[in-house]
Length: 264
Image 1 (cartoon, rainbow, N blue to C red):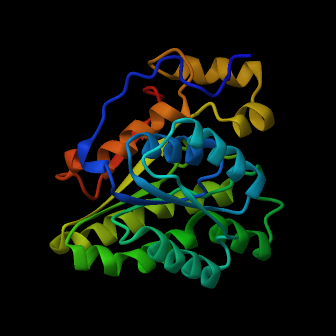
Image 2: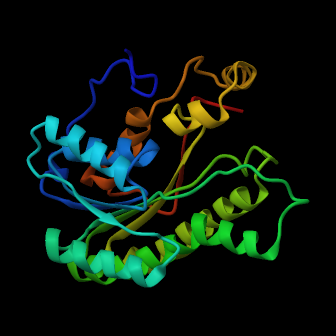
């Protein structure tokens, strides 16, 4: 059976600078995160990823092993709303993999909800799941990047707040805050040659999207709004992230990069 989340053609660039480079991806067990982990592994990077979903993580590890990778990825089971646990996982990754010079902040949850049903507790949950851990992951890896005088921090945002989508206000508001982290810390870390950028997906055909939120009408509307009249896939979304992680993206910082098929 054809995998509906797999790009139909993979003829992507190889980046020599990513070979043996240490990469940490949050929320890396499935969806866009898994696509990035797999692509980094194919590049020969040393990859660690954190996630709460052990079952999906084990499936990803098996897929990565099938590529006979230069380095087998490391999985760390973490609830990213638990900041001390996140900090401990980063410390363990540093021991296992060495200095981390690429961080991809990706973990998020786009569960649907309305403004009427928002409570203070759920507001805090949406910020903790979708934004807070970005800052603390950066705080944990930045000292090593500064010492190395080299680093790339890539924050995965969302085009949802830019498009004024209103079916998950807590998520969209949290994702708008990602750009604040990027632009502020790009200025902070720039003198130490540490770059900070945001990559924003549009509608990417992940298993979660296709099983939870997909409808024929929804996809028809998305393709109508896109300049490219087809689905966007996790593996091709990852290519922008690879570029920013590699030396090829060395002049890019404090920027937003949309990977959305030209959606208006």
